[in-house]
Image 1 (cartoon, rainbow, N blue to C red):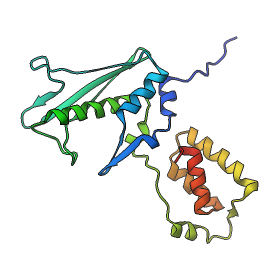
Image 2: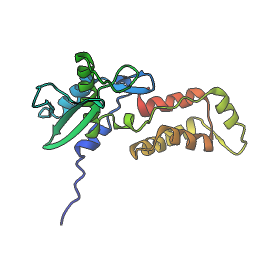
Image 3: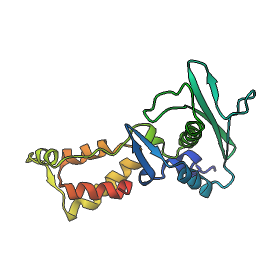
Length: 202
């Protein structure tokens, strides 16, 4: 008789880590701290390694094409699985740089490493655009106008949390979880923020 293995994969383990408190916004983009990301991976997988491409002619850590721009390339190996990633060298407006500086190349290498770790699962939802949407009191008030909904209270709170956690474990996005909650219940801002903190730690 064979038993089904329940051991989680590298991707599942890293993808379940909440990275929200380690991100920062720059313009329209969300960045994850590369030093924290690498530290988290090494705590779980001490044998994890990374490497980056060097131009064989110049020995510089990026590829370059005149009139096109520069790219940095990294690879990360965890549990004998190697994944590669690349990222264009960009300025502070996220535009490609035709004449990159050493600082721009260094920053891009670290961002590329973080993106590479996302391919293994850590913080991948950032690149999928899953920011936690903010809802306004007016939207809550309008939603609560329906008389057919059930009011959230101590009696049904545990069930609501359990359902939300199950949806979260299935990779359901926060806006979908929130919409389902507000479709069924009369809820206030404090309860929404409490549920969000339980699910995402923020």
